[in-house]
Length: 286
Image (cartoon, rainbow, N blue to C red):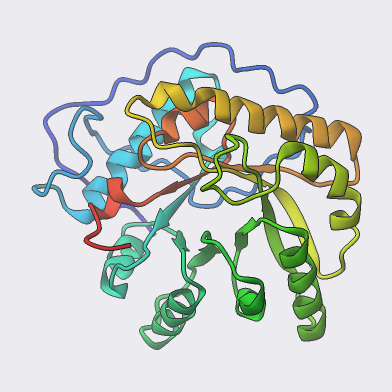
């Protein structure tokens, strides 16, 4: 589907590429090109992405332009990066509008709401969407995570991994998932510590019905995005170490970066960014 033309008065001039950060051991298999960027819209990345004067699709295209610039700054191909539009608490009509504008990947925090929107997409014949479960999953609700989803981003305990394996196997399905890592060490954050993950990874990789494809983290909310860079660097380094120590692990994804910090995350190797506010605007709740 072609992207709509966005009329603006200024043009994004891509910066000249600089050498990318070293990613030794990152492997040569490129990630799938989910939500390819492009479109050639002429947009100013200095424009506020939550400006109420902009349409929903215009805000989407501004985020895509910022993703492309961040990738180019470190010599990356923007098509390596998947933009997941975080649509939690938003009506399906907004998803349909973005889908008409070329957006494919959408993320939901609550599994119940995710299933509701899957059903709405079917009812309204909105096809070709890729759904991501990005929120914390209670072990008792693991069955809800087995479904027509591209990726579950938040496998944060061995117990949840085992439950997903059990439920997926019983359903004859495979759950594609990422392991959530608490890189910052904040008590409020979920996830494995890097040390726990390395110790438990052999058992996790052996679970049937669960295909682990990489790592996810959430950085602390900082007033300056640059302050999050060490968090993203550590997750990238952990991914590199896993690929070196566990060659059987097909870890090709780093899901890191949100509205406040996705450009820094891309500079540090993110392959999936989860962006809500910059596209949908601020949420009244949730």
